[in-house]
Amino acid sequence: MSKGNPNPVQTKAFISKQFQAYGEIDSIPLSKKVTGIRLPQDVHEALHGLSAEDRVSYLRRVISEAVRRDLIS
Image (cartoon, rainbow, N blue to C red; front, side, top):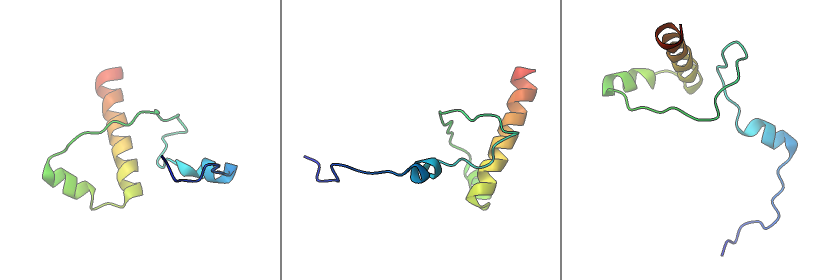
């Protein structure tokens, strides 16, 4: 039996900021599903040398460009 708050209240301001994605590309809507992969250790370390916001923006841009170039066009 859960002992949490039986009547939780989440304000509209809280909900709107709860899942903010950064690094949107040209205001194109982002997928609701996440794509995750394991990378070689040296690549992982280089990526994690970036700030979280820079890393997400960089990966989103590079992957999007490669898929559009190699698979969509």
